[in-house]
Structures are given as C-alpha cells and as structure tokens.
Amino acid sequence: MKNNISVMLKCTMLISLSIILGKIFAFKMPFGGSINLSPIPIIISSVMFGPSWGVYTGFTYSIIKIILGFHAPPTINPVHVTGVILLDYIIPYTSLGLSSIFKIKGKTSIYLAVTATMIIRLISTTLSGIIIWKNLLFPDVNILIYSLIYNAIYIFPETVLIFIICPIILKLINYKDK
Image (cartoon, rainbow, N blue to C red; front, side, top):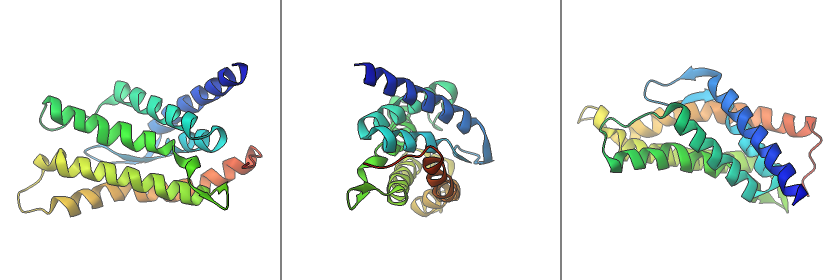
C-alpha cells in the first residue's frame, strides 16, 4: 500500500509536469495540436512504473487537458463532442501510457515505445480529422491526406524531440529497465 501511494504521488508529479510542458510549445496548429514535450512525462511514468500506472497517468492527463482547454468540434452535437474527446484527447494520451509494453529482448525499447505510441496518436487524431473535422474543408480536398498531413506536421517533430530527450532523462535519473 505504501509503495502504491509513493508511485501515485510520482505519477501525479509527472502529470503536473506534462501540463506545464503542454503550455510551452514551439509551434501551435490553427485547429488544435502543437509541438511540445508533454508526452515525455507520460512515457516516463509507463517505463518506470509499468503500463497500468502509465495508462493512469495518460488518462488523467487527457481529462485535465480537456478541462483546461477543450477544442470543440465545428458542429456541436453529442456524437462529435464524444468523438473529439475520445479521438483527440483520451486515446492519444492514454496510449502513451502503454509505452512500457514495447520490449525488445525483455527490455523496454524507448525508441520502439515512442514510435508505436506516437503512431497510435497519429492514427487517432487523423481519424478525428476524417470523421469530425472534415466540415472545415472544401469538398474537393481529400480529407484522409489532409488530416494525415495536418497531424503529422506537429506529431512528427514532437516525436523526434522525444527521441532525443527521453533517453537523456532516463539516463540522468539512472533508470535501469528490469
């Protein structure tokens, strides 16, 4: 029990760090999305404490992100709002918490974890663009290509930054995968 409280407090601090890092961005997209480092603490929580705590951290972060700055869909109806909540917030950020399940030879591969979870995030936000945000575009625009490019513009550079920074942080805190 004492260990669970300790891990919960550490995850809570990582959620707080994600919120702060989410407010500091290099580039912000016009219809949502930005290049920032908010995924790093969520990924680190999963790597350090396992997928259950990582999912807890990612899910909690997604709920707080909704509360602090929900980006409403172009048409307000329950289906679109639910779709945005799931596809733009809960699935992308909660999936980051699964980072520790991506292993090579029994050890978490931070590069595989980041790649896999950011691909899940890209797929989820691209589906949101196809299903919900399509009303913003002209009828002759290929929504799949547009949504994929729009989301890749900020997710790809963010992934590169995470590739560089995450291993450095894990090394600085002397993390050794079991």
